[in-house]
Amino acid sequence: MQSVLIIVVMAAVLFLLVSGFAALGRSAQDKAERKVRDRLRALGLENADDERVELVRRSSSMSDVPWFNRMLENMKLAANLRRLIRQADAKGTPGTYMLASALLGLAGLYAAALATGNPLGSAVIAYVCGSLPVFMLKRKKAKRMERFTQQLPEALDLMTRALKAGHTFNGAMRMVADEFDDPIGAEFRQTLEEINYGKDADQSLTDLLHRVDCPDLKFFVVSVNIQRETGGNLAEIISNIARLVRERFELFGQVRVLSAEGRMSAMILTALPFVVASALYIINPEYMSLLYKEELGRAMAMGAVVSMTLGIFVIRRMIRITI
Image (cartoon, rainbow, N blue to C red; front, side, top):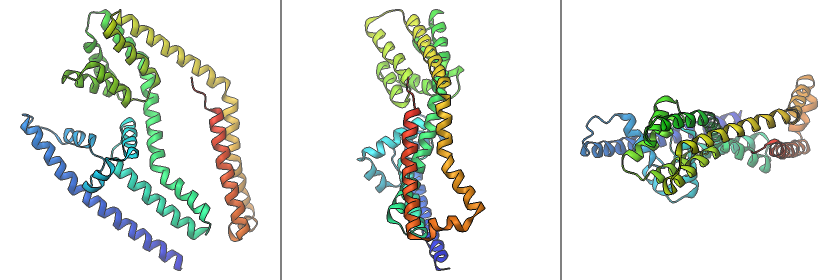
């Protein structure tokens, strides 16, 4: 009963903390939005909408809380997290995700300490819980980058046809921005807008490469930048890059087919301990209760969890093939 009461109190404290930070963030966000609107009006953009204001404000802010934003501006971790958020096209600021990680980590630490009383196990669970926001960002980024890579050959083919038809490089990029969905359409549109606003084309393409974690895009950016300095048939260069990307897709597909058996074995080996433990708990709960009622049992269970975690990590590294 006492443990339940403590958990309820901790949940209430966490709720109050989150609510307080949200209120502070909302106030700071309103102030920042007013400043951006004033700047846009000074430039003659009287009808700047909320979405445009939010994009301008979010691109340069680490947190909606002013003092937290100033602290994060000097942290490399926050800069890397902002880049990850941008690549995943996720909402929120680095401060939001760092606060969520801290709260989840503390909640996991407290719950594990109550349940097991093992410091090492509690630390592991706290780390896993605290890593969940970053894990979700990386997963979203991976899906977005995979989609970008799938769109890239078709986009390059469209640019090739546009250049052969007599369009400029900017015109070819405009076609890609108009014809393709997110992510490649949105990223090319932003690059084109930067060029139109007077930014150097080479720098705009380099910034595109920084925003998009796609190895195939590097071939395109480097080739275009070199062609601008040395000259050459840009349409043929882009066409060759599109062919190269397609060949890499074909090779990667063949590798996935050949490694399918190994990946399936890895999935079975990963799931088997958890399936067996769940089945034993359903069949004979008292037999499995020794693993969490006795001190030695908790130590053995924690050792098994750590060993399985290391094994899963090694297996994933073994089946991950980079082309």
